[in-house]
Image (cartoon, rainbow, N blue to C red):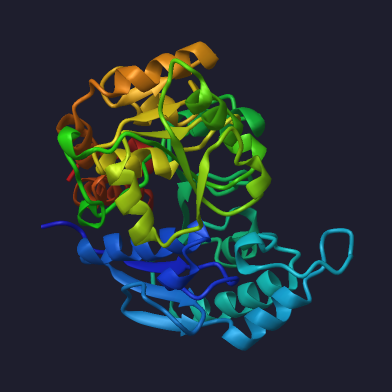
Length: 372
């Protein structure tokens, strides 16, 4: 019988925890993590706003929708300048008035409810550090770190690559026994699958339209004579980056986007920075579609070179990879993605992690209790 825990789950105050706010990745992560925790049978107390689709035992409203909209429209940046902000671009900072108000209420509401051996789980980094400081006796877990500014004593990273990036940036030279790496996770039923004969002869770029996401690389590769494949682009941002004859499809719903990923022959994720994980690369593979990416960050773990896609160093390799992807097996690509990233597999990694943390209430590292 698996151990059951009480978990105080903190949403971010810039969103309603519904799929309507899916442009904010932290919102989607909160909903998915709540679902995972409930599948494991844990008690979940969610601190969020008013509208909610995250499974929980109790919803504690710590910011109203009216307050949220008012504070976002009157946002000032770190320089004190007025900077009205859409929810997906909100400053995730503890100095933000929105965060200050929500954090103060979260601290009070947890104080009313906390019991010995409860956990607090956060995905807000330093922005929610006041909560950790106020309830210092509780185990505060950053449960899916793909952001800069992690601070907690107990951290779960989205990839080994980003764990080491974070340690290096913070000058952490020694290992930390109670940190872990657990990947992002998905319900494979949300991703349609098409086998090779059903794939259509086009490439797809899915992501924000900013230079550092590498959209220019995708455009140039597909326009090269040897690639001979049209490129379609899905995402929000600077449409002037859609060049070399690529077709812009718009910022589509998650459902429509997934259908396009299933139909494509290949998906491009040629990010220029060190991606902590890159969810699109895994989502494409769940559709049975190979991925062409850059050779760093989370891609070194999510893409099995030569089997589920390719990691490329220069334009010629990107062009060559387009042809090679036509020979890869969609059934293998999807099966591997399910095996590694399905919520039904990943949830057990989180259970083992919480069980390991529970040792801290006893002998910690010195415990000789075998794993559950």
